Image 1 (tube, helix red, strand yellow):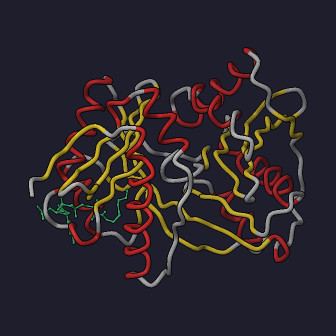
Image 2 (image 1 turned 45 degrees about the horizontal axis):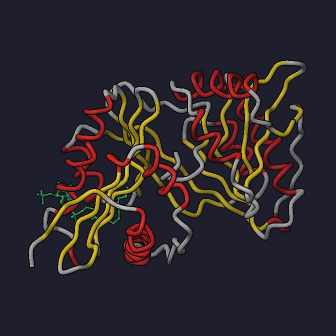
Length: 299
Ligand SMILES: CC(C)(COP(=O)(O)OP(=O)(O)OC[C@H]1O[C@@H](n2cnc3c(N)ncnc32)[C@H](O)[C@@H]1OP(=O)(O)O)[C@@H](O)C(=O)NCCC(=O)NCCS
């Protein structure tokens, strides 16, 4: 059977999501963490496919999808959202071939910075990424806790105001993103603001907007960004308070090792490290003292 690499289409996305779930769970079970992933509608994949079809690739053999890759760009940043190969087909060069195709997407887009989030315990992915010029930058811990178990004593000093998508607010969000991650993500804010399961808030110190945060109906916090590192703890405290006021069973967030204030607060509130992840990036990018990613695909 010949192996074919081609651009992904909308009707591939349910099958690629199933492949990603089985590949993640194979990895996390093998390393003693138990299953991590569950199937979900590929909404952000579809959004990215419509925005820029050059970023999504599949490897197909015998009529079935055996691997997939997905990248997106914003300004001069290229991000690898997913690279997955069927566990039974790993080690045959498929991951490398898919990665080369998505890196062509980075070259075409003129990206200056490249980044991705992978599993700290996956030796193959890290070695493969290093071959292509990505290096370990900062650990990212997935923390969670049951809402009931949270101590919820953080002092909340920032005022949270729901985000609406007017032009002035979009410019404020872009300014915060440029401070936190170097690029504006206006199109991605529009995606999040259109998601009925997610609420976005601007965080104010007095009359100054110093950051923003999104909270999902599942109790998940992120993305969250602030203008200055010394605001990350206060913004995370405000987001925890909003998440705790919801009805979800759990509260969770991805916290980079460079966000000391948020890490201390998570531990103090009784949250637990569930999965260790890793930000890898091209040289000169990836110091994130002001940013909590939403997940390894959205960033
Ligand atoms: C990571 C993954 C996509 C790689 O795909 P693959 O088809 O198995 O990879 P390839 O066969 O193209 O390349 C394997 C490369 O990994 C690297 N590698 C493997 N084991 C390694 C190790 N112990 N140390 C360093 N590098 C290693 C090498 O560069 C190797 O290439 P080589 O054998 O030619 O030297 C695949 O293993 C996978 O889906 N893993 C589970 C999910 C995952 O972690 N995805 C990445 C999430 S961001």
